[in-house]
Figure 1 (cartoon, one colour):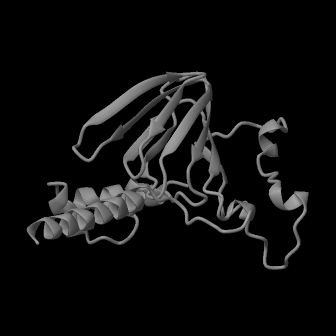
Figure 2 (tube, helix red, strand yellow):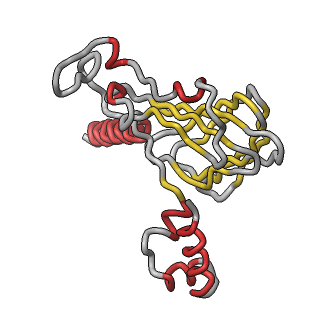
Figure 3 (cartoon, one colour):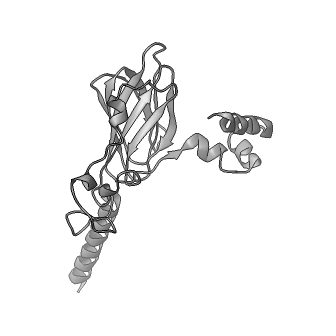
Length: 209
């Protein structure tokens, strides 16, 4: 009887462990069809084609501020159920992609040109940084705060990021803290500063285009 009870406990623990691993590794929900057709049912090659990145090869003027071009579920509906998305990051000299997280996916960044200072902070508050050269890859683990910065005062940088979700999500840390109406006192106590400093930070963030 004791042996049977132990076996049942072991089996239950095994099932729970498998379930936890599955939840921890799950990304977008699996689909049971090849793809998810649009509501009107019209599917041809155009449905699987995204042209939003053509501006990158059209010879237009480079951006003067950090710019992101995205191909996610919102911009490219055929990604629904495919667990992939893409972004092109354009960094004029001296610009940054401020600290942020992607709650539903890791990010794999490929630097096409220029140099970038990148880094992320893990759940033990360890900071991992690197100076990337053109041709380098860097992975930002899922859900962790990270950043990219073009410290070159003369040259731009261009990077491509791939995600394991059609909708990885982006949570900007500066905007989340200082542009969502969190009480000034809460922030002042949390950052061990005064309310006037918090108000200046909020005003500065609101003044940026």
